[in-house]
Amino acid sequence: MSSLPKHSALLNMPIDLIREITTHLSPADNIILATTCRAVRNCAGQGQFPPADTEENREERFEYLAGMSRDMPDHWVCEECMRYHRIDTADTPADSRPNCPLADLYGRYNQPLQLAPADEYELGRRHVQLALKYTRMGDSLTPSHRQYLGRLTAARQFSLSYPWEKKVTVAAKVAPRIVDGRFLLRTICEYRHPSRQITRDLIASESICRHQQFFPLEDGAWTNSSLHQDLRQFPRAVDNSFESPGKEVHGHCPHCYTDFSVTTTARSVRISVWMDLGTESSPLDPVWRSFVHNVEFPPIEEVEYIEPGRVRELYSSGEKEEE
Image 1 (cartoon, rainbow, N blue to C red):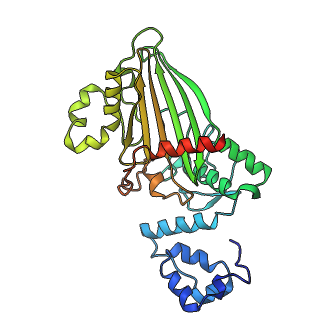
Image 2 (image 1 turned 180 degrees about the vertical axis):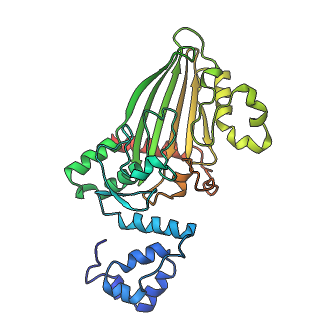
Image 3 (image 1 turned 60 degrees about the vertical axis):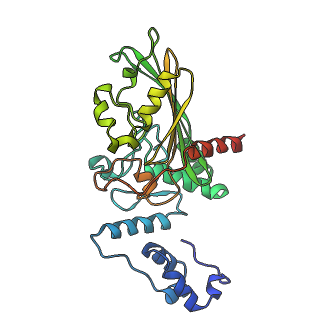
């Protein structure tokens, strides 16, 4: 963290006003502020974390590490051991290899985003963290960091074949994009059958996020209950799509920033998903946690998506900027 310049406007402010500002900061931000220079530290104090062995303490320490690493292009903040790790430029969503020895051993916090083609594209929080950081740092990056950013945000296209599932094939494309300081992801999966008509059972149990899954028809009693209507956005869109072949049916998830669409023809089902994975922050960002499974933390309830179509529109706006 760089120190403040001698003629900083902050250092010219009244001491009482600086102290008033610190009362509105989190413990992590207060500690970071104290590292800027001796004058600020003498005025505002060093700050302190909440009592140890509490979830609040862990969250504040994560926020502190994330804040301190904002200008450290060679390091990322690890969820598992709460330390910095040096980057491994070979570690990308297409070839995920976390360099924390605890990540594969325990996997409590460092969970990847679960996409439909999960084995081919495992996006971790560190990938999001570094891509957003490098994009923000812009021209100050070295050529090697720019190359790594290109690999972190590269689109990936592949095909999968499932002969045991009545010879269905899946063509998939995953394309990240950073727009307005947010990490967006579009996934397109097209399920095809070469010789017979596509039916619902070919995509049974498929999911587009943690909350939206297409359940087999025999599970209809559970998914139709009034308590689970908000979990039926995707199954409802699939049903509507089969009733209107060729029409793109749109939907969204109320519990994470996800838009999706379903288009059905006689020989294929095309599922498009747009996700907003949040901004540059600590690994405990509620937006990110709403997407990933984590046994150590309760489900995220504070993320409510009440603007259907916003993520898709934001992703499309990035496409216009690239042109």
